[in-house]
Length: 119
Image 1: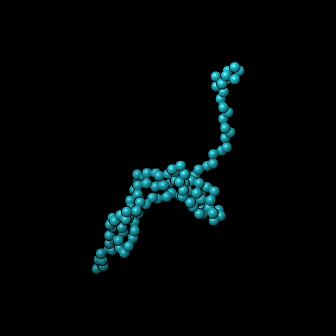
Image 2: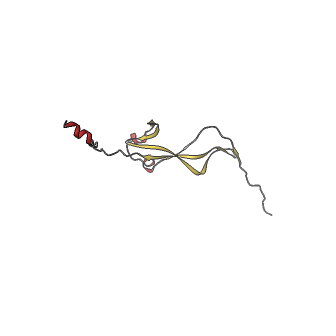
Image 3: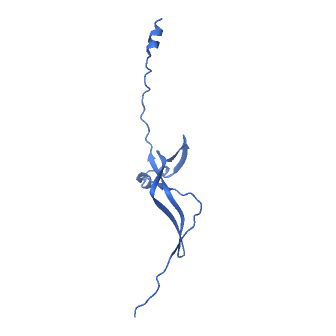
């Protein structure tokens, strides 16, 4: 005779907690940072209406990116899984490189300025 026991069941429910979650994709150089402690301290700021993350000497532009695959944030309790949030957007970090110093362009002499000087 075989032992016939019912398998354990888990209840899944959806109960949004009303918090707007975003998944932040971290570049490898931030995750595996071997730099000094200053590089492990991150600051999020806004400049020119754009969000930026600063870590040590590096600055990253924060860009929202939509995904076709929804990500479900789950919270586990005793034999219950609760879907707390469904995310359709992620935030990616794009490193901002310093723009190379460019010499200011020489002003173009307009024809009427050339002839006006000789009068």
